[in-house]
Length: 136
Figure 1 (cartoon, rainbow, N blue to C red):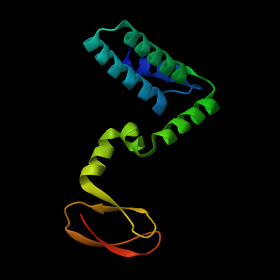
Figure 2: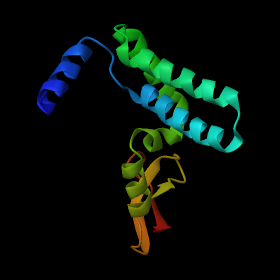
Figure 3: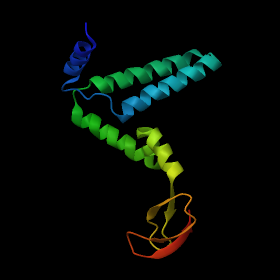
Figure 4: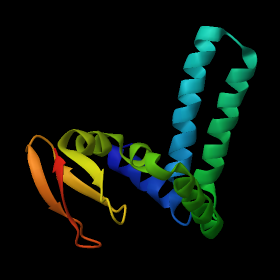
């Protein structure tokens, strides 16, 4: 069986199903971490917890109830708050952290992104128009 044929069959099987979303991927990654901890601590119940996490993620991936799964995924992403970029795309979040500094406007508390390593910058808040200086 050619690799393209296998990929086509998987895509055909997933048609009309939820597929892997952020919550399912997070559950699988958490299961891997739990298995690594289980290997160090040698407890049986952690292995079962990892198995339940993988089973739940497989349920999410195979679900045909798209509206409910999308609502659950959005609630999960909303609950993550500031950690959301680190869960969705850790490589991009790390690049953002290294390249830019995030500061808050003193008057309206709006976050403003400024490039790192440029010295002292005069920044204009995009929300309220206040000008302030920051060290990048």
